[in-house]
Image 1 (cartoon, rainbow, N blue to C red):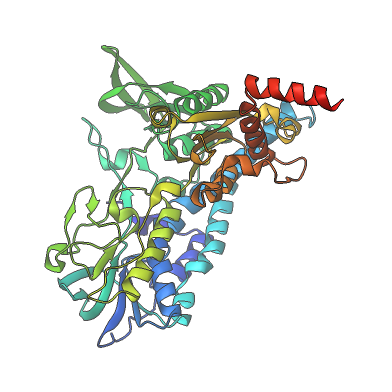
Image 2: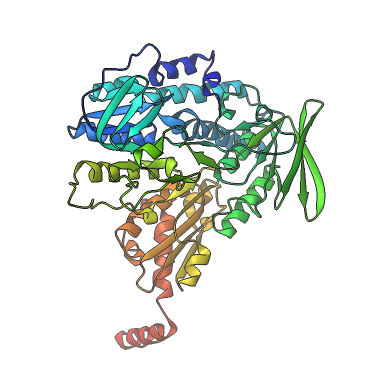
Length: 506
């Protein structure tokens, strides 16, 4: 398991962070005789649930093993996006030097990049800080939680009794088992953000969202980057055409990519880290100064004594029904601990479902609020961004849906910003209802999220054609998709009728 305590050492902004999110000199309170809600885990899901329940007047206890804010604040979304933001700016600046708009040479001070990331992380941590939780009237406990029964759990010497409970203990980066490789030989996404020196070269294992984001970040900041993966392409869960478009971008950055590769062994020589892998029945090797493993995450379910609570689980995660209840109907679970949809905004949405079902259901009445991830967008924050919602290409074709495609180069604002690479795909049925959206392009996350409203509320894409968008904006790509759909409805037969009508009106 990652030793997070070693990661937060000696840096001033890290110390500022720790003061807000770690126990420090804070003493756990005496527990109440009974809690309406006990929340285990103070990541995005746990914090949303605890704050909402307390705001409604419930008596709430929140338990955190290590750091408030969870992986999102401390080791995931926040630090990674802070670094990506600066890496993308460096990438944009390099275009000015290339086009001789700015003369001179672009040099990156990597230690200042990391310092800025820690400063931003410490600033954001105020939203998850101890004081904010205490001000909400929540009983905050630091320590490991162990269920004692179906209605109680223990934190240190304290026993907390509850009417309802939520398990939101998050996840941690998967480790890699490979001949010759020990845990000290590589970084994961849980440890990479504590480095201060830019590696001259780095090899990433994996081709998912985290790997792609960090590969581009390090390449933009000056590292020689190599990706080795058993997958056949980047972002294997995304639209295949989008994967190839991103691959082209990575090639332009000088990133080496080795797909369909099976790792064979690891060794170290002359302070370089070597990977030996097989591809097409041939053996190859690659080397780098650093090694970063990004092969997914696994839920934190060990040591909770879930059996005593009557909670079913597997190594993939905790089992829940559509109301996010475990086998013990008084205990809910959400977020990464479910082992699926490991995104902060999914955890947030799930927590809101739990609040309604846990506080406002009675024993003889089933909970009413269901969790439906169908209309939840997600985004990979590369440059260009990759975003998706609903059905993918192959699933949409099986349902005989129509695809509306608009290239970014058809939108004036993309041309003005010289970010024409990419496209938007919208899958619609015969009534123009949206079933899926995929996009690669600048601001894809915002654009797909805008279409999420139309998809959720069953607003036909054709109706968007009547909306007015500011010019020039990148969101005009949505209107162009709606206009393209309207033009497709103009069949030759209808055109023939219209020509006769206008001839008659002359």
